[in-house]
Length: 157
Image (tube, rainbow, N blue to C red; front, side):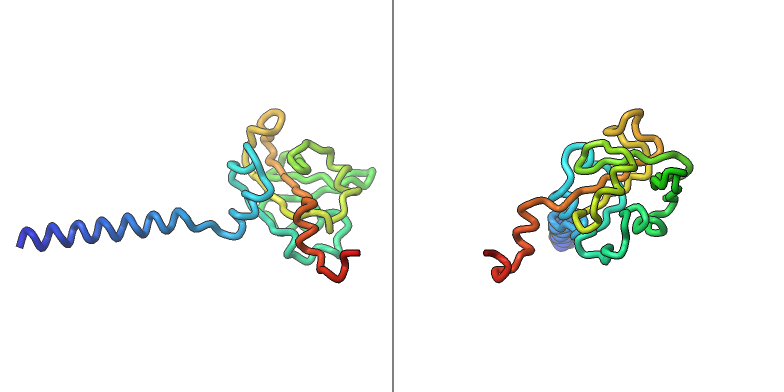
């Protein structure tokens, strides 16, 4: 009887270990997207990821207009000069484009069709000046190698 219990315990332990190993190897589409675009502190930071390449954003002039209502706690205010300012939980968010800090006015000149991924980090972010206490919006543009994959052979001269 002890041998049967011992074998059953070993079998159960082996199955549990296999399930954990298989679970760790699986990555969601958003994790794969994060690995493709983000690096360093941006990759490790917890946030909400949006796959903009597969979203219908063409009708929006500024990507912040599209984000409004899709992220809890994010509000977009328009200054007197027409610049959209993102505010997360009452504090102005830091904006990064391809992991370089940018002013909110830069987003008026950035085409929404050039954006591949957005990562919204609601809490403090170590990569921002002053730890980005108001949260961070990291915007990633489509890379050259990604655009080449999207072209069909009939469009190439």
